[in-house]
Length: 509
Image: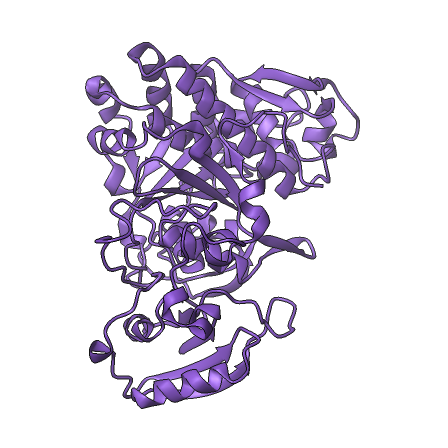
């Protein structure tokens, strides 16, 4: 929408922050629960080309499923009247990764800020060629690689897998039109506004305050009003995208509660599912109503309180955002191991008989010494991420015993450049073509976390799991301190549950 339409939109908001928009993809999957809508929906669903997915993907996790939800704000088609991005290029400002735990009783959505600086691996262009890898690029730029109207969901999925070391099982893209229709289909969502919001807050380029959009307090919004609410950044809190993400998480929680309160019946769900699938683009694994139904049925038993929303650990780097390590690594590792942020082991069949975990990004349980890999011809750089003296030297000597060309890199650097002395989890990073070697190497570091990197070769940053021995590699659900083995202590406390008060914790800053 432009300034000619009641002063809303404008270039400043053309690139709207669409976390809540995309999150309704999760809601419709959560809500759908009966086969009666199969034929009605079958013609609605669009899929994207999976040929663009990387060949060097992470292995499967211990349990559970990961669903990447992306928002498209292209002005193509019906989205033009709703205030999408400039031109016909598909754009995505924010996305989140939904992990559904193996017990099907817990779920967590992790927001990834649009301005996060990440490595974007090679991505497939519309003509079939592949791009070169990009380092420290804005996260949201991955979706625009190739500049096609429908965006590049495969590129964003590759980027998330590179960032997290987690295998993304499914990807869902939702556009503005779908969001507008879905919020209307459920009769609106209760939101809370901490102060009066005007048109000038939605569009700072307007040049004047304009009409009142939202009075202070709790209210019901749908359609265009819902879009305006999830776009607002200026005039609330510190005016940041981080603050907007927190309000959008509250919106998603309200939407989930609304759908649940109406019950799982055709009268409620048919309009919602019809609106959603008309504006959804999904990976081939979800490309039919029966596949959507199968996934949706696995989510119906999750209690509202056990649906959590967090933002990946972050900090400002000028007008951009850096992902903070080792806290982010610990979060991905806990998800990989199917541990909740409050330390519960939620894997299906977890504990005894839970099975071996393997693959890139694995929280590895190790193998018998007799099965340890041979490192002949493989170079490894080893750094100490703890305050334990001589740890890197000890690991380097061990690797040399197994034939690796290992070098002691001394102390690992933290985000600030100072020595990193608080790594809880050993992290193994590998460059292009080194995935198999890195996965084999992980057998020597029980509890290690393996992920891709833009840097060539293989590097190991040792954590306390290695310093303290294998017995501490898999934390107990009852462990004190940071939940899930090194998670920031405040993460569980600050997480939003789907049943939280809509007026609570609305804005960072």
